[in-house]
Length: 174
Image (cartoon, rainbow, N blue to C red; front, side):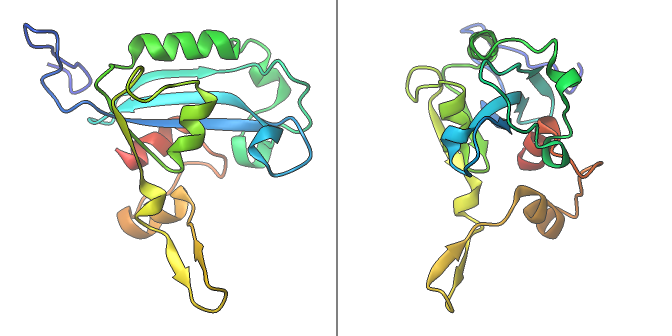
């Protein structure tokens, strides 16, 4: 059996733990750093074995101010044939088990962008950013590290390119 094949028991439940990593990459649709100035351009869902369950490019409906290419690695031509956000959400919900535990870096944003509802589309989520934040005594605030920094320091993993890849990001968490 392939490591990426998830068998199901007779009652339809997975025989492996239903833990999935979700990652969403965004382009800029506004000029601020607020979430309202971003729109999803790619989404990936990876299972607990590190196998890609779902990945797609999304063509935002809003006017794109910046593709954030140094971060996303994407250009206008990459998103030309991307699916609509509505279709991406629909397909994600089709493959995401209702009893799934979603894990990710600042997962609340990814869950919101994909219009997922806890207790309806998935069971629960865990935000790993909360486990690795550090207190800065000088400023009296917490610093949240990037997923790439956490993967490098804790796992010795580095992304294959400078740009974010939602599948690599999700696999780093799995």
